[in-house]
Image (tube, rainbow, N blue to C red; front, side):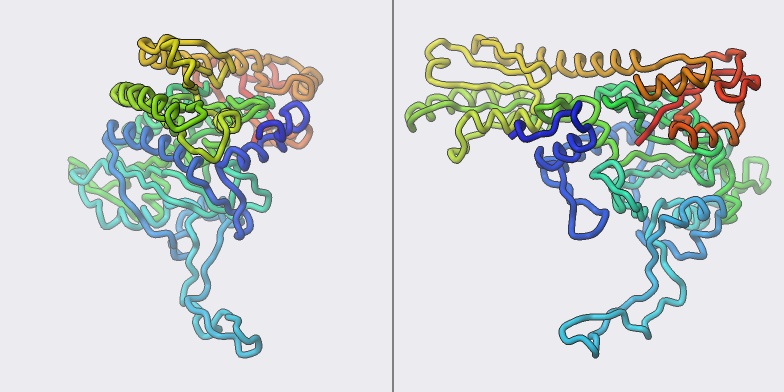
Length: 492
């Protein structure tokens, strides 16, 4: 199965597209720009959802759900937000179809069924949510509101790629309301930390936390925080964003509250989200030319057991041992699958699980039973070892921890090796073309310089890193004074 996979060195983009389909994660649908997430791909997304949902609830958030449709008058209330998303909006203009009198068996939009006001299919939900919050908030006693929703959104992309950029995608979006600026800003930072913790501890992806430049901010935000990851081809990927909205949406929707002094004030806000784009990050960070490589913490099943047998008697003997192993592993909260299909040979099963990135594979045959051993294969290193049956549970548990840690360390080493400091523009262009990755360079702080660099190189400022110290220098393009380095990269 993996033999037909284009290598990363030959064509990274083609490798990615083939892997998503061949590993049974997703496929293109009949609707242009939209995808079908298949059960195996959705199982990974469910694991992501479960962990993030737990982390959100542990930090005091609750889930709710808001409408898919946003009246155009509400959508345009916050001007920067409306302007920022206007070109990506799908719009509902009619509410009914009818039989087409000129084409037998066909339908057309009923010209008499035009909506009085168009409905925008949500590209993001700030407008409908803040219009709702107006009815929820009167006093400081009603604050804070810490709400998250799991939903789908539509952004009419012209160039799409499975998981990374589709017209419709799944995500979560948090929308919080606070009595003070400080609370809203602390919320923004809290969630960015949650995203970083999830990316590193569950996805095994090292990320850089930072602030977006003004031109890269979320439309309608005063500040946008982000986590930036680096893919194996040297391109950056924005893995999550958390926005400090100030009082912009409260003012747009006239959401005021009586504070403890009895005075009316506008509410302070944050919003934040991650999407199925994380699936793309997971694939591109760890996978290899043989297929998907999954960190154990997010694998639909962490262990698969493949029986090797020639007759029913051998199968029953192997199954008995496999059942015991599965019972013990499940007691340790390790997800395990026993592949008893008789339609595929063991070699074909091995190839499938290699392609699908299952962290550990156990093979058991008659000879293994005689020796009281099993064969254990790691997906990340492709190494095999023979393990005494009595120790299998401890060995599996230790190996899963080691795989999780090893994947992170490997990605971290690659990331750190691909952060390059440059001090002049010729070096900037050279590194971008020959090495890629993040380029740490001085920038004079102007949108004009940022745009010029983008035009000349296609590299953008990914973030102003939070952990960078202030450092006087000269802008890599203009030579004008700069107070600190920022990270540039080509990006998805």
